[in-house]
Amino acid sequence: MDLTLTQTIHNFTNIHYVIPHVGGAFPAAIDRILKSAPAIYDSSLQIYSTRFWWDSAGPTYYHQVAGLLGYGIPKSQLLFGTDFPYAPIFTQAGSLAAVKASTLFTAAEKTAIFKDNAANLFGSKLP
Image 1 (cartoon, rainbow, N blue to C red):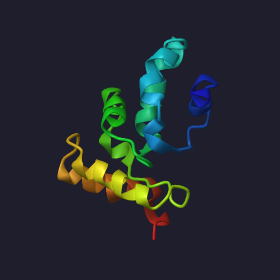
Image 2: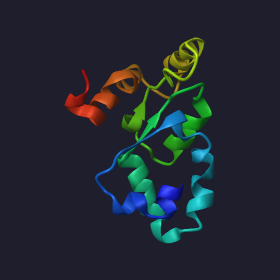
Image 3: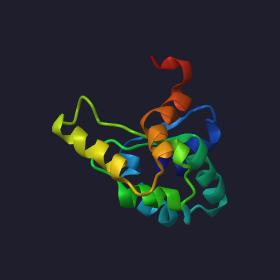
Image 4: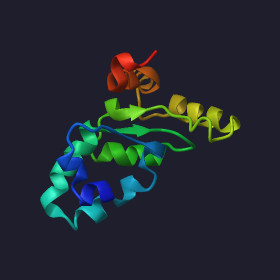
């Protein structure tokens, strides 16, 4: 939230941010914190929907992602992540299963989360 309240995300418009763990507690706190800065409320939500990319690293899912989607974050901004090499390998299967089993997405949207969205973010920088 510091990047928002200091207006860093508003002033440095060429930066895209990858937010791990689909923002952690962020979806639950967005309104509470942004209501203290009403002048940047709408513009901040617009930035979260266009220049923020939400990485699913770790055992996150349904409620956190539903929270982001409730703010209008497009599914095209969601990325699959694993926390590799920091998280133990046994945690990867749970993260993968959470996305695969999610009722929030179609099969095409899941494919996008696993591959296409990252390709849109990183373009030719991916191998």
